[in-house]
Image 1: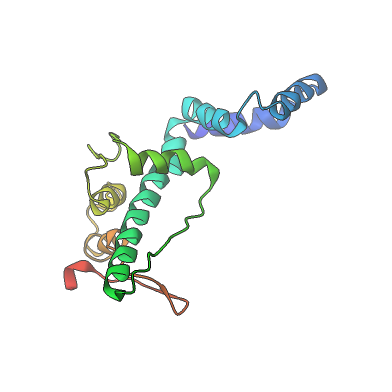
Image 2: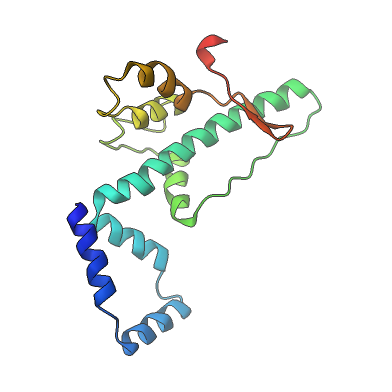
Length: 171
């Protein structure tokens, strides 16, 4: 896979598109006949599936799980305040992640990489599956300290310009 990425980069640096090709591509974009981002992600998935999994699919799952955890906290804060005001959250993410995050939040996702994970799984289980790798499986420090920190529940939303996180197992 690495050699394929390097070969692709070398080829693209040596092979310059013809002016007619560039003009045709720009005209199709301007006429909105094509969605450059979607096409680019499909090309990446087809030619470099492991790269797509790492930089798009896993991050989509991570972001969706953290959004769910954060919404839980906002809901709890709203209920505890008793003022009847609804809390709102705005998530700013890259356009390439929007479709995947929406899928995780609204539909069933099954990914062999993430285990048999679906929307019915808890965000914590999704995060655990993402952080459990062969590289760290025999490292006791990582397993006992880092993985719980990576997967823990968000317990407080930005307050006084600081993020506070707590391990739910100690509460």
